[in-house]
Length: 207
Image: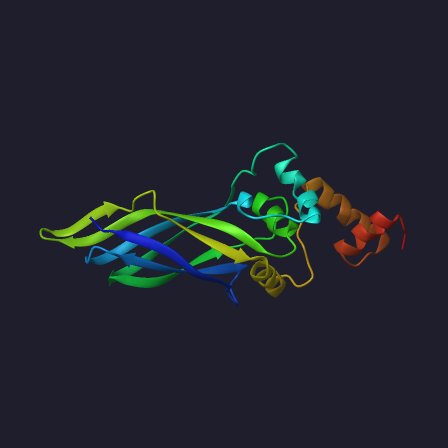
């Protein structure tokens, strides 16, 4: 049976992707001396908000997620991604491409957007299928469910990623009827953009 361990070495923004994406660089070790043919890897990534402190402004901003009750905040699902790792002996490095949206209605996006600095505590939980070479040919086994790795992602890295794709912008999800009403408001008043229409509504001004 393969004796695997996982470490997250680094996380960096991926440039020129179709959508904001973080690249997680993993080191995978096989400590039993066996050469693996391939590894079909699945990784579930969760945010562990109880593993860091928050300043008063961050705590207020996070009330909408965690409330004000006692006890540590519950974990937040961030992403589930898969990759195929080529065969290796002893150890290898691979990258996981993790999409990272900026939808403030999604729990992870709301959490990221509420932080000013520091780190985002992440827990990477691994599963999947190991393909090895045994005495009778190809051998298949499952990646044990208990294998995990932690990583403290700097908030600055996430902000760099978002600014790279959406400089100076944020995203909100609106009901279709609200979008249609905004479009009519813009048309009736010859307002050039949706942003300007919302600003007009907030200020109570009429162009």
